[in-house]
Length: 486
Image (cartoon, rainbow, N blue to C red; front, top):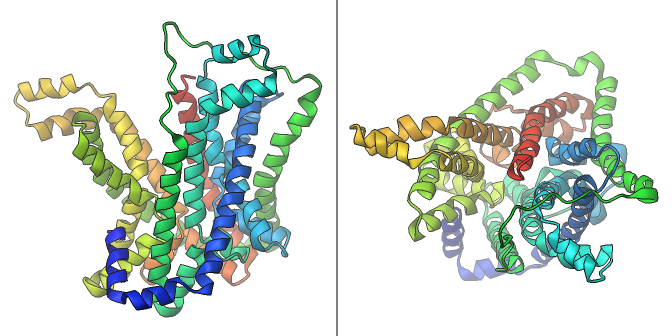
């Protein structure tokens, strides 16, 4: 649907108008800003994530388990809360440098998780062989360890890159223009005008280019260990005198990515005092957020269930194509999905414009991959023989799947619902564009108050979002360790 929307709008707008809207100076400036943001943020995030992962997984860093938790914890702070904290601490933080700094702090954990998980699984035998051939520690790391981390680095970098293209609130606060901020501004001023739609088309092209670049960088090399026996756990590297300087790396990252937001929230809550804790307004926002999150999570999980079952029970070419369609839409920015739904509801189904149903449909499209990943893993652990036994006893295939497989997969479905629900809790762009009048979620109320420069009033809403996101962060960290067999 989002791709069809882009193509349809392009055809309806006409080639001459498309050229006029796309090939102009403002679009060039947005393109330069976006490319600079991605090209600077991704390498810095890789360096930070790999350094933190190596220190917490391969060295004898004091308190490394504690630092591992702190390396993941920034995921509990929404990206626009990071920028809110930094803007209040340093009001002069604007432009590209500020955007890169806040982006690295907010999104590096997305890279840390897969890299740390991969480091836990690596067999150190290859490193021992390289060392026995005379290579020093740095050469061993650069020529043996780092190439084996390519999949994790490419996957995490793709995830961060897609977040950079999709993020709105973070860059508006620090006054850095990207395609997403320009699209929302155009939409709010012209209500789905041609300029916003054409910018959305350029943004979709950037997303596709980013995904294609990740495929090329990933390559087709083998990463599996070949041979008999079991991989042993790598011994911890002794840091010795370097322990104190190395300890400063996770300490500085935690101070900047967690200390600044938490201290800022505490400061504004202290300044606001009791008046900022308006129970009726905060309670209403919490109730609406929970209602939308639970409804969206249930709808998304139900929608992902058939594809999850097919991907495990009936793999094939058609299944792979359908599964790719489920995944790709989750990689698109929320503003593009929202524009597509706005266009369809306004021109085809006007009664659905700015209704709860449209908002829930947007959530389903945006968070479908989260539900699909968890469900697919759970269904794969349910033996197909139990389904066959149920059918042999008279159950239809649908009854067997519902009564046996999906019942066994219930814990995974619950985890998928939790991941989707917490994603919806922090979602901002699609909610701003699609929600009916009177909708007040934690994210939209926080955004409305910060837009009015009422930072003290916005602090409780930010704190509630952080509290709601903490379980998700813990779940991600635990799952990454389980994936490595720990």
